[in-house]
Image (cartoon, rainbow, N blue to C red; front, side, top):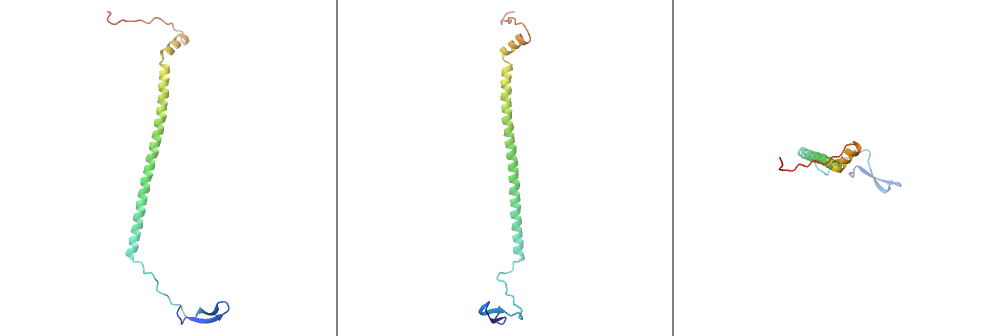
Length: 126
């Protein structure tokens, strides 16, 4: 405040010789300490913010695609493990079912077939 705008007042609340603004005088505005931002600076700032947003959007999209591919890889590995276990179970079942002793036991006991001597054919005989 300027000296013309202030008056000295003795007040018990404000203290001795306190300065108060004169209500009859309009306050003057001080020039701001920082300079005005030019249009070019604003456009540059806006473009920088847009570029950063675009880059972040791109990185997030790539990250989402990578996550999707990782999920597909994980699911494929689970399927491989499941199928490997199924194949092992089926291989052991084939071994058990094609066992000649089991086949003969089923034929004789369950189907009441009779066992005959195997026919041996020698090679080289007409």
